[in-house]
Length: 438
Ligand code: XLS
Ligand code: NI
Ligand code: NI
Image (cartoon, rainbow, N blue to C red; front, side, top):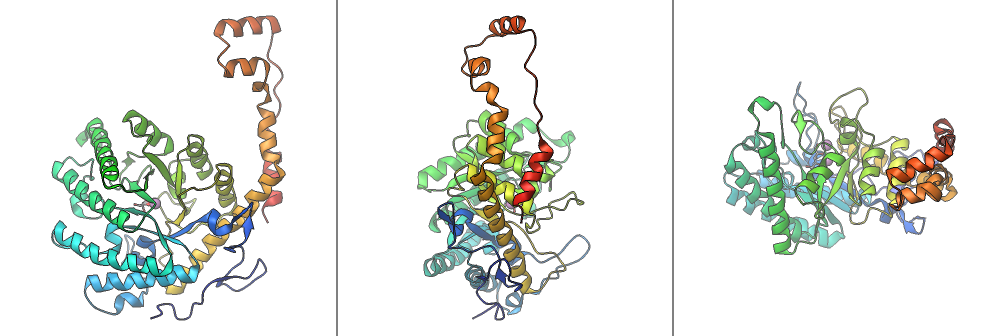
């Protein structure tokens, strides 16, 4: 059964191709710096936007034409059909990974027990499809935000029963991730945050969040799930103040509660910009502390202040991201997950292909550009030279811990003044980067 009868397997045709259903840069088997593009980029398609996104917005209902959803049957029948749609899409895009929330892949029933049973039926089909195709689960997660019971949050709810429900749901999601061989498990703090402090005990909610994550670590270890835990920072939306606001805030939270060895970050481009950071900043911060886990690759709209989750097309951003990834020695067990949705106006099935092709090409091009920049070494040489005062003499004494305030005073009293500063040359460096963007 072909759900995209008019779409062929998308092939690499080279930069001069004008075929919109071809890659111009993503050539999975092509080697860059000794690894194939497929190994570097580890693309993933997300279930929620790609198969569940309806195109609804606060001003109107869904617009998406999804013929497979109109073929009738129970919600479970639709869910099982969507598995076939997902695997056809993955095969035609040559994408090796996918990601989901528990509630994306299977409908919620009247009780938790029934919901789990239905979930198992879809998981069995996903497992069979994974075995047939070699596609892998990059990460699983639990949706702890859509159902009205999570109105006040999940682990940070004022209602202890909701904490218990969320725990039961994550326990099952961890089991499902194990069943499907998922290599990561993501915690995005859905509604973990607050709108107003008049009704909120902030410290108590943070304590509960930490308790919840400790329980998750314990259970992961108990069942022997070999998945890296990832926290996905986001500063706002749906709540005004999300507790996991950015990488640095998450780092402080994890350290405060003794969780820093158990987690890394799943960083999302649109979340970085909502936090007032570039993705370059968020990734560099995470990589500096060995916390770069995986990426939700998308982009925001400069003119809109919320999570528009658009497909990434900006070569400066993908170049900067690939620079960080290459400098860090690769994505490890993480990947580039397109947490992105087609616009409400792009409602035909083929738009899903245009969207993913564009994102994949933007990263493949970013990879080639970043590799060329690194090969010439101009940026890294500039940074190295800029800090050379720390490589010997007084700088080396400070870094190695030999210096004290007294010794530094003595040094400076004798010298009289600091060495002259040199230019940061930002504009020259920006021009150098522009030489590679082509
Ligand atoms: C929402 C988040 C979400 C996570 C997974 O803004 O990006 O989609 O990636 O729960
Ligand atoms: Ni995300
Ligand atoms: Ni998001």
